[in-house]
Image 1: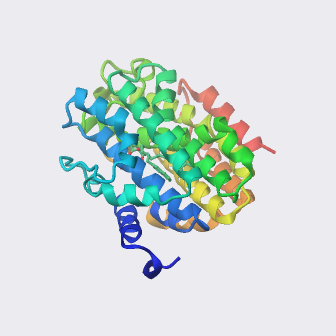
Image 2 (image 1 turned 90 degrees about the horizontal axis):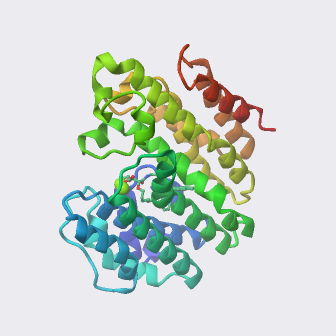
Length: 340
Ligand SMILES: O=C(O)CO[C@@H](C(=O)O)[C@@H](OCCCCCc1ccc2ccccc2c1)C(=O)NCCCCCc1ccc2ccccc2c1
Ligand SMILES: [Mg+2]
Ligand SMILES: [Mg+2]
């Protein structure tokens, strides 16, 4: 469906998609059939919800109400929010355009999007008032903001008939798809989140290596800082077997590319972050050329597995002697590289 056949509101949604998402816009727009528009709207609705979650200027009480009631805005043609300062505020200021396109979707897609939006809003409002202490808390937070996205996407894939019903049913694997991406973001964004005074690294882990999470920015603390970083990366890698199993079930090429590309970017990012002191002084990003190469290669299951092995082996080669997580890191690496 070309841009000129699209309604003005549909066209605006793709403008907002490209404006608010560097990493997902291209792969969403390449999806087949009516799945493309459903995923585009799913993205914009959740980006609007996340923009409320990320806005630290909204008083806690108001934010809890906004998050818990957000899904109801999908049925309110005039609802919008004009007081955001966030980089992505356009999706809140012109929410009527997004909700108009949402109401035009097939009702199977609407059901999934509304349900995930409701669950994510409730989850965000719950964890907003608590700190991420245990690894279970970490998994819970990532489930609410990204695991639910994977679960919703998988249900959209099956509802579109482009993928088998099992893809939408197996929520354990879909959840892992999201956790791997979100944990990678949280690990990579240590400094950015520290500047915004947001803490997503689990306290049970970092408190073994320092008194305050911000201590890791001090040069004299670099060794315990790297041990903490390597422990979290090892934890994130535990999701890779589920990612491989999830990907092995996909049959539609555009769905495969959509799912594979964020995953290979994530493991390449983890490999670059592993034992890398730059995580504590700047943002570690993989080079554009490397990213383009990965996108072109990750188009079938065998080459996806080869890429995941390659980065897993790369991490395995840089495990520092005396690193407390070394045995566990070695174990998950050999598990991933031995998957038949
Ligand atoms: O504000 C920012 O710029 C970053 O926000 C992060 C945060 O606040 O933690 C954080 O916000 C999370 C809450 C909103 C989630 C919005 C989202 C993201 C990607 C989608 C892809 C397709 C369809 C819908 C989607 C919805 C964020 O964007 N983290 C990036 C990782 C999230 C991955 C979501 C995800 C999960 C499973 C997937 C499976 C297959 C393909 C893509 C997948 C994408
Ligand atoms: Mg965000
Ligand atoms: Mg957020």
